[in-house]
Length: 174
Image (cartoon, rainbow, N blue to C red; front, side, top):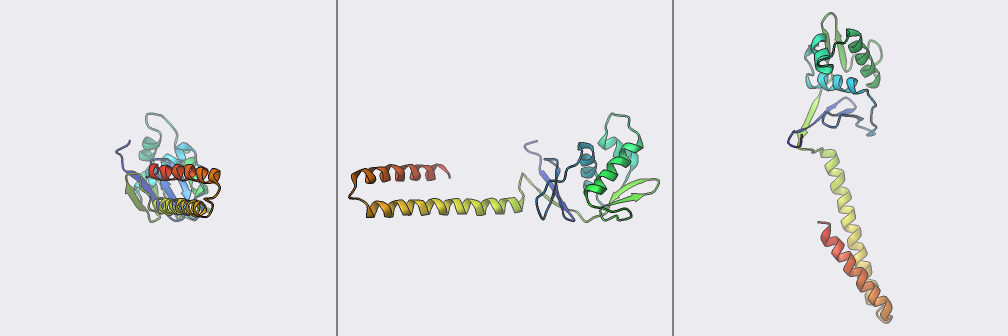
């Protein structure tokens, strides 16, 4: 699994992380709760967006080596539609193809890579920059306070110890 590309799909207001088995709303990051089988069904539909998937194909994919009734598939599709915010007769994401199966009809963008999510990487770089700037500010403050308070030998020793601890911590954080 370590060498497997990280599969992330974006559609509508959702972000589906197929590897971590998570569905989030892109605007708030809120996790959309789904049963494991409903999530497997969503992943299957999204990975074959635009293609009609026969009911038996979906049953075999989501419930492999298990005999289940078509009713299980119908209930999982209903749960998905509800979680995605679809109203009856509203088929923004999942269309029923009478007598055949289902098709995922929303536009899907796939973001692939080895664990990379551009939005997440951007946020982490921004936070890392703030931490570095904050540490730099602390070091400057310590140096300035040492410069202005050298008359008290105890304070000067404490500041030198603190400064050396900060410098060793900042060297170890790279």
